[in-house]
Length: 59
Image (cartoon, rainbow, N blue to C red; front, side):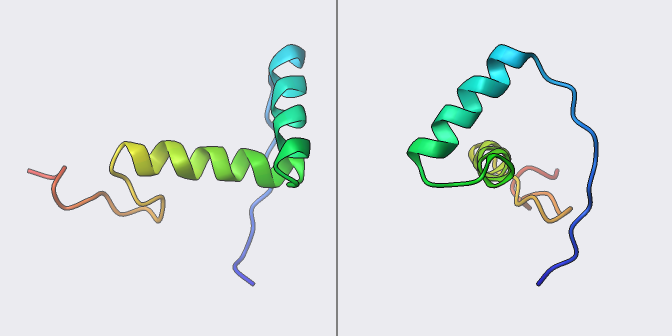
């Protein structure tokens, strides 16, 4: 399994509750849901999330 890094995230309680509900609906852990959402946001912006920018975005 790939190395994982832990970090502290401060977030509004209402936002955290909403993400927790979504995670439960999609049968994911809260951590898994946050990772999924971050990856999807990067993908929509044309970023891979692996530290390398999409070649089309680099000029």
